[in-house]
Amino acid sequence: MDRLQHVLDEIAEEAAAQDDRGLVAQYIPELAKVDPKQFGIAVALPDGRVLTAGNAATAFSIQSVSKVFTLSLALGKLGDSLWTRVGREPSGNPFNSIVQLEQEKGRPRNPFINAGAIAVADLILSGHEPREAIGEIVRFIRYLADDDAVRIDERVAASETAHGDRNASLAHFMRSFGTVTHPVDHVLGVYFHQCAIAMNCRQLARAGLFLACQGRNPLTSSQVVTAHRARRINAIMLMCGHYDGSGEFAYRVGLPGKSGVGGGILAIAPGTASIAVWSPGLDPVGNSKLGSTALEQLTKRMQWSVFGS
Ligand code: DON
Image 1 (cartoon, rainbow, N blue to C red):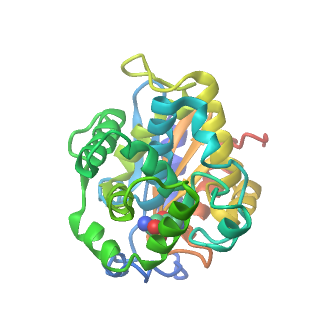
Image 2 (image 1 turned 120 degrees about the horizontal axis):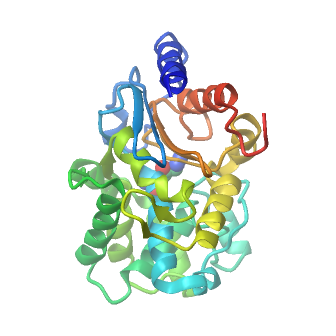
């Protein structure tokens, strides 16, 4: 264990020394204000320990990392019928692209691109008012993180709502095909609020632990999703979790992972650990630049890649 802490400290030191940190997301004004010099990492282990380095206690906007949790929640509610609405193939396109939607008749390629996550938000909304659906998502994440301090950053939600024309286009387009069934402003209300959830690396690593433990929360012994569902969520994270950077992430890191434009990444070493890393500067595809490098170094030094050493 000392070795893991030593590796995390080394990685945080190396990150602190980096000048080229990428660019913070500009299209959501509230995210553009975040200081790019920050870096945090946390590793949650099945025995309950969470090891950290850097700014692991600083909350950040989880953005698209939330899509892992909404997918898990929606699969629990609907089961495999979810896949009639959303595919599970890599898109090879930017996360907010609209082109494939027309070619593929309004069925998003996967639940992690924006269109797919908006379709999943529509499913979670069934039988609820928007506020109730948002509450259900937050409660689920608080339960997974074992921390009631997880909250929504309302300023980020408002900022994205005010600049959400691209997502509104995706939602309207899907509604014309029946992939989205609720009023667009309700669905986007759910989607923007899930993206605006603020968590720190410690909480996020803890919340992802069920995916490293065959769907079980090892600390409460409750089954969050079935083991085969956890395996499949990990598979989708590996193939689709970094959009058109997914191949590069699999090549360099070799773990299922999900990024967000807030600069967070959740990565899963099945059977071993759940890892959260955060650095706000992004690469040109929209994935955390130093976060990806940190995970590459971690898997290399700990030999945690699912593909071997
Ligand atoms: O909908 C959006 O554009 C953002 N709320 C989330 C995008 C995102 O995090 C993409 N991830 N790298």
